Amino acid sequence: MAKSADAPHETTTPVYRYKDGLYVNLTNKCPTACRFCIKFTWKMKYRGYDLKLRGHEPSIAEVMAGMEAEDRKRPFSEIVFCGYGESTYRLDDMIAICAEVKKRWPKVRRRLNTIGLGDAINKRPISKDLARGLDAVSVSINTADPKQWEDIVQPMPEFKATGFEAVKRFIRECAAAIPDTTVTAVEQPGVDIDACRVLAESLGARWRERPYLDEYEAG
Image (cartoon, rainbow, N blue to C red; front, side, top):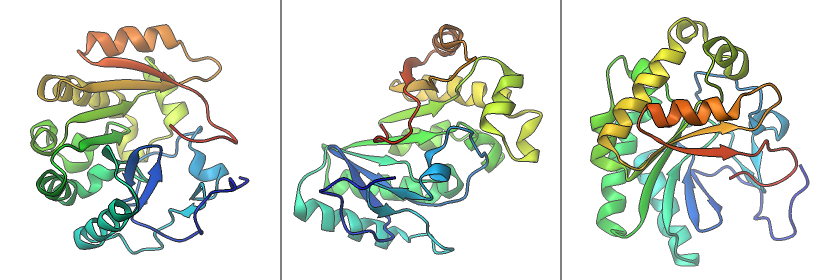
């Protein structure tokens, strides 16, 4: 990926910028290997940031220090838990960070971008936990068909048989607990985008289509 002229010096970081948001890179651990994920084509880089954690997941203190350093440069309007991993693997730390953000920056929106397997990862429903800390949740489901879901997101073996239904339950419970819950799908050949919209709405969530990313910025 070619760097933009104003890209920051490449360095491993617990937080990184995109537009007016500050993104939190909590973990590289992920329950899926999505075919469209830019971490593979971009080699764990993002606009000059190195998001490969190399076995060291940032502590709460490191994340907060990163946020404070960025705030000194310029304000941010939201924080988004969205690195090259699944943040719900660190559920308790994520909620603790949200609490600190609310204290220090009460007007900043707090959002989670997720593949939707948080209940399966934590072996219990987590929507009420998320509602304690988050203002919004965005769930990337990518298809309304369970077999196609397996092919597109390539879940780990333990999530293969029941993963799609687990994601649907997660969406339904999040939508009930967090009104600003959105389901997304990446535009890809063979995916029935309209069916994805219908599914999202049937689960009580909002809907947003996402473009397939290649050599341009992630959204």
